[in-house]
Amino acid sequence: MNKWNQRHLEAADAGRVAHVLQEYPYLLPSSGRALDLACGRGANALRLAACNLEVSAWDISPVAIDRLRGEALEQGLEVAAEVRDVIACAPLADTYDVILVSYFLERSLAPAIIDALRPGGVLYYETFTRTSVSTCGPSNPAYRLADNELLNLFGALRVRCYREEAILGDTRRGIRDIAMLVAQKPG
Ligand SMILES: C[S@@+](CC[C@H](N)C(=O)[O-])C[C@H]1O[C@@H](n2cnc3c(N)ncnc32)[C@H](O)[C@@H]1O
Image 1 (cartoon, helix red, strand yellow):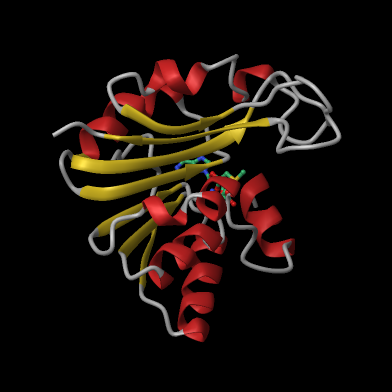
Image 2: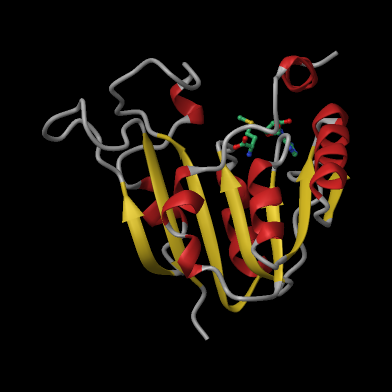
């Protein structure tokens, strides 16, 4: 069994809703199609579905997708959860009003993610930064963002919110170790 299946099997619940979605739910459209890319057990997908969006959720782990389907059923929410390698099978162009990616960093997918947004569509992105206060997250720096990297990766979009506190000021406060972006496709 691969690493992710094992982790998803052992986990107690659907996981945690990303900070970026907890902080900025009011920037979501009131309806439309949303994609949770590399969704894991789908806490974000479930939250998006509860916000009246028509949600697809993809992950390479069959265990994660099984658990998400079960949780959606239990909560009475509709989520089209699918086992899918999102690198081999990227989202189609011009399809989604919202794309959310949390704690999954595959830089080569950035152009496809931008293409997959409809004009006016919104990207929510959050993951670990190399500059950090704690030791949480991947130890391989390749899987962590450089300073301001999300802004460069998604430079074709209009930034609506960006937060990356690094080690500035009182590091006991704030949301550290991550960068979060909400950005909108022009048009
Ligand atoms: C750190 S978890 C994050 C899960 C979820 N987004 C969250 O924030 O809880 C990374 C996820 O990426 C998935 N993953 C890794 N490679 C993938 C790929 N090529 N295609 C789809 N999912 C992938 C793993 O199965 C895992 O569920």
